[in-house]
Amino acid sequence: ERGGTLMGWDAHERSVVVVHRLANAMLAEIVMVTSSAQGSFAPTVLAVHDKVEYCKPMAAVLASGALLLRLNALLLDNDNNHLRDASRLEILPPETQTIHGLWILDDLSPEGRLEPVHVMPAHDHGTYDVCSGSYGCLGTTEGFRLDSRRTRVVVTARKHTADSGSISYTDELFCLDFANEELCPRKIVTTTCDAEKGCKIPVAVSESELVYHFRSPTENGDLYLASLSASSSSEKPTTINTRLTETMPLSLKDKLIIPKEEIINNDNAPFRGKDSSGPLAIHSLLFTPRDGEDGNRPLQPILWLHGGPMCQYSFDFNPLLSWLASCGYLVLAPNFSGSTGNGLDFMSRVLGEGCGLADLSDCLACAKWLRNYKEKEPRLDLSRGIAVAGHSWGGYLAFMCMLESDTNGESVFSCGVAAAGITDWFVQQRHTEVRYYDYALMGGWVYEKEVQARARAVSPISKATNLRAPLLVLH
Image 1 (spheres, rainbow, N blue to C red):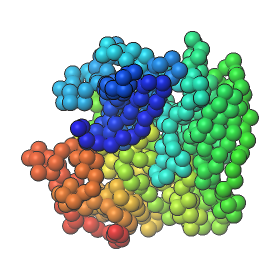
Image 2: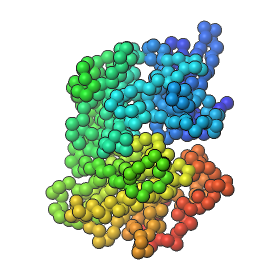
Image 3: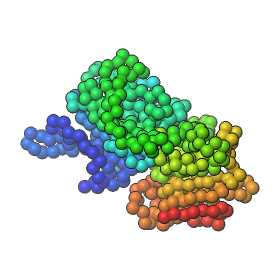
Image 4: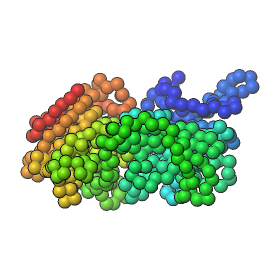
């Protein structure tokens, strides 16, 4: 009756909890379906999940009967009263906040309130992700995992760059034991060097062991076994990790490059709130040839833009970027505004007025950063300028970048590659197969009066006469 799709479910005794994605597919709802002894079913909507593209909502029934939820919860007040009816979304009070995290709901009545689960106690709830992310296939089903007793949970967590000052899009794994009255999350897989940084996703949990999936810039995804032995400190894991599978060809692994993680500050970022101060931090991966490869051969700079835009370049398996670096390019891959992994507000910067503007501003800040990077990397060759390239949303941004000029009237980028990029928002919304996505990005339909001017301004076709440098278009 409500349209949409089924995203997931969990069952325990007579209760089934369902994750239902609504016809407006940026929203989902958590529905509890309870069966009676007579076989009748009573569905009850318990919570609404906002901005599904940031992460998939999850729900599980704990042994106690309480629900463990991964939600972008819409909190109506400071008492954690939350939205249960998606039809009320348009009339929410201005103080409504969307907070991402793990939550417990143990009172399933209409008066029940969400209680935050503090996975990373040193950081405020909502300032870290409880999901993994990637640009492309994750290699396994992402999400938290319960043991057979439904008391122990292993979850992926990652601090936001902007909130913590961290320079990392890499995961940590934490174990929570809901059988204990005092819930003390324990970090169970330690990261001591760049080779151990990457995407870690729990696969199966028992009373004493965890199987998890690990990917990194030099690993395309394998299974590991970790011990869940007790520890008195959440900061000192007592794990013994054993590799279970070997799928990475060693000849390929030897050729791959571990990138540097860089923070690029955008001093001119638009659409900042009144409470924002200082530059906007843009997390980026920088791929350069390894020391000793081709000596002092000049490096040509490329700004490489991911698709989505609600995706991310995490510290993950990115063989294309490694290959480009091995060919003599210095490749900068930023997580510009609209990317996931750095908080809901950061992703939302490209929804509505910021579409094609907030993300473009970050790309221009990256170009400025590359010009100044010559001081740190003497091999960087700027004599032929800076290239820009991308696919899908990255292709759209490549079009937009190529139409930008500097104060001298010269193209900011000396050449570009735009693959499968949007050139005309009016054509895009008319023929798109993801109407909800394009509606959210543009903040409405292009035939609406208040949207038309904005859509035209950020359609590359409207400014095609500004093109000043070679551009390769792929479709």
